[in-house]
Amino acid sequence: MSWTQQDEDHHWTEISSRYVIKTPIFSLIRSKRVDRQKREGEFFIVEAPEWVTVIPLFETPENDEFLMVRQYRHGSRQVTVEFPAGIVDAGELPRDAAIRELKEETGYEAEEIIAIGSVNPNPAFMTNHTHTFLARGLRKVSEQKLDPLERVEFRKVPVREVFHNMGEGEYSNGVMLISLSFFDKWKRSM
Image 1 (tube, rainbow, N blue to C red):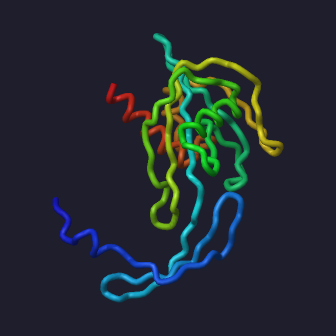
Image 2: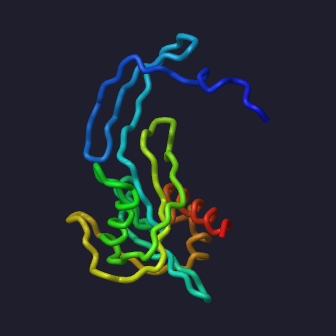
Image 3: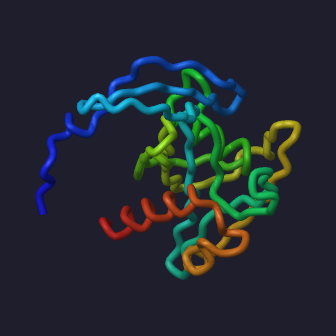
């Protein structure tokens, strides 16, 4: 199937914008835009920093395992099981943020960090990308180094168990589904 409209027919031009609110983790922008047919609209855009998720993988002949973290999430008001993840700090490369988050949340380092995917989590109203990295050759090098308000526990979970539970109960984080999809794609390409 071919698309009938040219890309430029879909674009909107910004007329004006202003910040509605700025917080440490996102800003909300009110943007006035016009399309090629001169239709004007007002849109709300979430400007957020880049995110990273790191998939720590223990590979063995018997049973591959992920190193997972478990913590309370204020948005959903529930405890979730997920991969180590976080915000990319200003001036930081996503790969470096993945290395940092893995060590801070688990005390582990990896011999190899592989970029396996990057997407915009919701292009309808978000500006950022979430970057997924695979961590291989894991070794424990330190204790956790958590922020004062973080409480994170971690343990190994069989890969098949994570795939089975993803999208349900404690495994209900949407960004996790994105990362697990990238892992599945990477695994199939091997």
